[in-house]
Amino acid sequence: MTLILEHPPEISRSAIGRWWRALDKWLLAAVAFLFCTGLVLAFSTSPILAIPRDQDAFYFAERQLIFAIPAMLLFLAFSMSTPREIRRAGVLLFAFVIALLVIVLLIGEERNGSKRWISLVFFSVQPSELAKPALIAMSAWMFSLKPGTGAPPGGLIAAACLALVALLVGMQPDYSQTALICVVWGVMFFMTGASIVWAVSAGLIAMAGIGIAFAVSPYVADRIKLLFDADATGGGGQIRRMLDAIQNGGFWGVGPGEGTAKFRVPDAHSDFVIAVVAEEYGLLLTLVIIAAFALISIRSFLIAMRLKSLFARYAVCGLAALIGFQSFIHIGVAARLLPPTGMTLPLISYGGSSLLAMGIACGMLLGLTRADVERRP
Image (cartoon, rainbow, N blue to C red; front, side, top):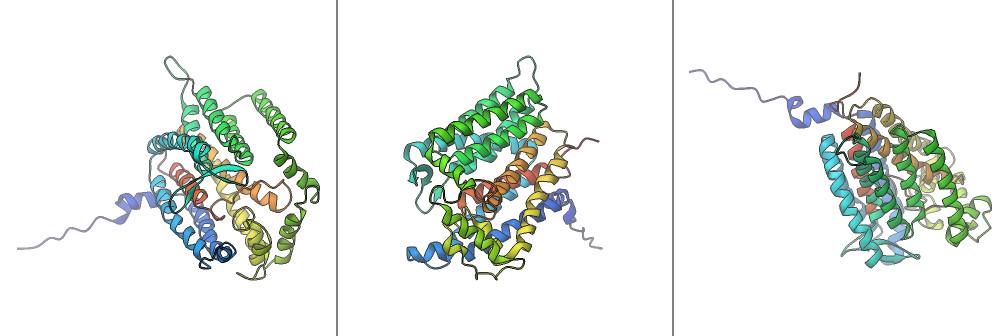
């Protein structure tokens, strides 16, 4: 009697194998590089936070690693999902985030005059970070609805969603996040084929909003003044120290852990982390990081233009715009091209909420740009 052994199925035929083959490897490599760079920098900047608080030197690095685990799981889950599953999850996430944004206004922890965090037992959550991928998914779904008999007015609902999120985030207040959210939504709206009249109108409204904020908010006015005169509001010392750190790094940097920017620049672990990169690792790594963000944004837009699914197309454009604009703002502040905004660098800056939000955003991006998502010829 002959025993016939069946060959085990090839890994390429399994669900994981199909997922791996369909992933855009360039996008995956760029995201993985930025994610790993952020974890390395967490160990470099952790002592400046931990030691003054009588904690172990790597206490905050360990916390970042803890948040990295669910961020990776969310990334994998969304990257393995179909566009329909991502759309449904995004709608649920949007409803959850709206509830959090209301809660943070009621019982949120106040820091520096803003209520942006919900304090839990061992950590805090910043709902405005999670609002960005949630609004993108919700708006992409609304924009993808074809107008017709019985169909809901997708564009109006998307605009209402933007207004609600912008209002709740602006009331915290968090003007930089509100501006970023509006810009990203505007890119998605433009991709739907909106006329130039709408684009010009949106630009005029944005300029009027900046003028009003400058007039009524001393905080916004001080930030804008710092862009033109570092000594205008007494905050020039911080800007000069940041620029000195960038210049001190040169092309190769002073070496990992050897920089002094993290001790002299407030929030060097989050809002100004690119200054730590430039000082310790030099212009070379800084340019590589910029190239990685550019690769993610440009390649995603090119893929989006070929996607058949309107939801996938609009969502990919929104996610690419989010990552591109947020990284540009963070780096632009360090180079003194933009006023200080308190914007984190995606996947690199310290912060659990930011890491979780970017895990969701990048997971959606990889899931919607897979090769098995239907393309136009």
